[in-house]
Image 1 (cartoon, one colour):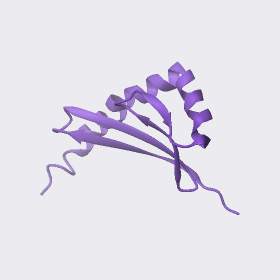
Image 2: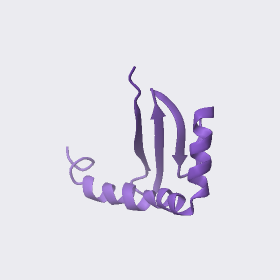
Image 3: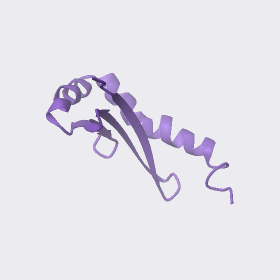
Image 4: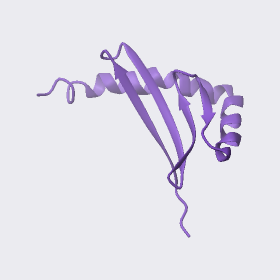
Length: 90
């Protein structure tokens, strides 16, 4: 039997980088069980399996600070790096 766990991070940009949303998803066997949404500012359990993870992440202020900061440290940073090669290229 094979089990697969992975995470994926997504940056959504509105009006350039004026408004940015960061979503971090945690998936186990193709089922989303927990996610972080910068618009909410907390980890949210999507299934009963995700409840312990969401509670743990939300109890760790350092984890929350990093996730909340990802809008700037991950999304906006990469937007500035990637824009010349993606958005402005025709």
